[in-house]
Length: 137
Image 1: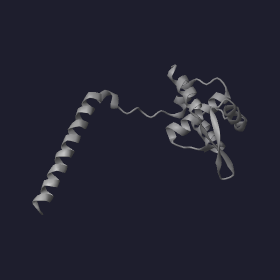
Image 2 (image 1 turned 45 degrees about the vertical axis):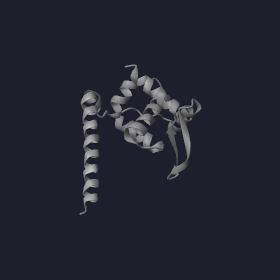
Image 3 (image 1 turned 60 degrees about the vertical axis):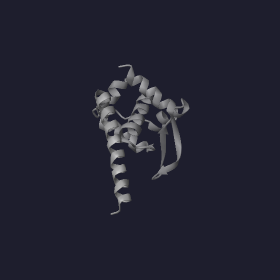
Image 4 (image 1 turned 180 degrees about the vertical axis):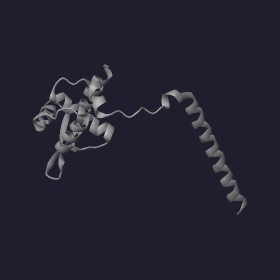
């Protein structure tokens, strides 16, 4: 190994050391803020949001699917299964609930279908609506 290569390796190690020290200081300063939030069940999430109608409950379930489960886009079957996991009665007409949420600007339809089922995702407005309901508690 040449002196030049050794010098380059030494420089890289010094850079890594400085970066590591900066990260450690940041972690010490923000220690309490870095705590991971405990996972919440869909039943608890619905209870926190306190939706008043099937339309709002469907939106809350959609939010949970997209932001807590990471499923986007989602379809009717995903929504039904999530209601069942929450042990909350499934709305008689999920498609109508989704359509009403689309009219309010809370959900949007995707061109992509899964199987033969339409898929949807939240809009920013829909996310903000649910986040405000959850914050109120």
